[in-house]
Image (cartoon, rainbow, N blue to C red; front, side, top):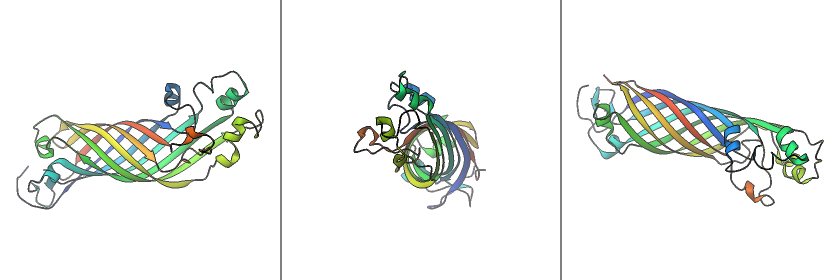
Length: 247
């Protein structure tokens, strides 16, 4: 790589990341391991980085500033899908309510997202790219625009819509309409140098949706306070990054 001086400029990186993502919704019991395991979805994303430490026009490093040596902007297009079932203490009971939750109500959601996040690298980006060390941890915050498609399959015949569960999961609290919502993300991860022009990335990300309809179910939170939180997911991914403009 050649060295030069430029105050402004950037280069590009492309890659992908994929992995499991437990989805936290109105299906199942909060903080329950069986719920987390049973409603485990899959998420994949194509990712693009703006790298401010290196300028593609001159194949040279930009003039040093703290920002361009410690920050990158990441853009991504993502896909997520998960089947949804009820797990936990109440769904395991051998009664009408337990059988309803376990056998007569299930769903699925698919979420398409596009967004951006600002990543902070405590170690020097430039030193890492020059082989100064083999891994580079980071943290990030971001925002995404999402289009979600919920599916809900429910049978009230054995409980009646006027029962406790029939009221909680009544038709007025269920929707299969596709819609859009924003989400906020926070993540922590690390890059691992694979070659001069490529990295492996490992990441854990929390994503909180600004809607409680992503799963297609939204009981009245004034009656059921356990429903006060919107839908969210926790993603653990592994990916690959390629540096496009480096020489």
